[in-house]
Length: 177
Image (cartoon, rainbow, N blue to C red; front, side):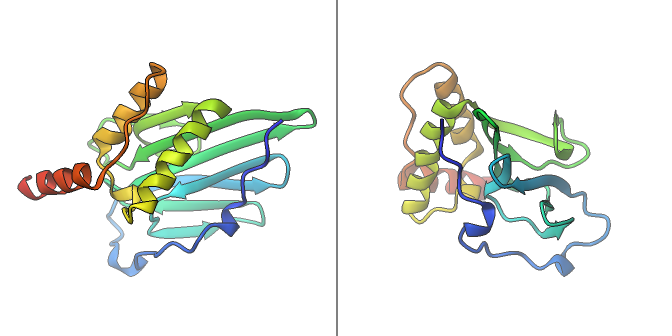
């Protein structure tokens, strides 16, 4: 039996962009989040929503701008213990991009990494912690790194480490675009 992950309300405060900078024509990606004690915890591990709407005591909806990266973690349980662990790193898209349909994400998103099961999720979380320990925002990490991490995870190979040099190379490449 697994320990229940911390509720999203215990997470450190995330700087939020001002919603007034988004015009009404900007296509947003909406992510459903939920927390029911000892049953379900659907939360953001990282990412910077431009808006968050509290629907009721248990449910919220976060909105992301196109190209924003975020990580959604899903933990479910029943009377007999944990039934599901899932961690997905996603990138919000525009209406013209090819997107993957994912439950709870409207209209969909580009799937960069999907970890299913406690073993896989528990191996990805320290990678995210290590990136944060370097002072790098995980939402600013190269999408290619998340894809590589997902492929290595699926193949049961050693997971690559994200280094400041790799991040600097990614940022330099973005400047040239």
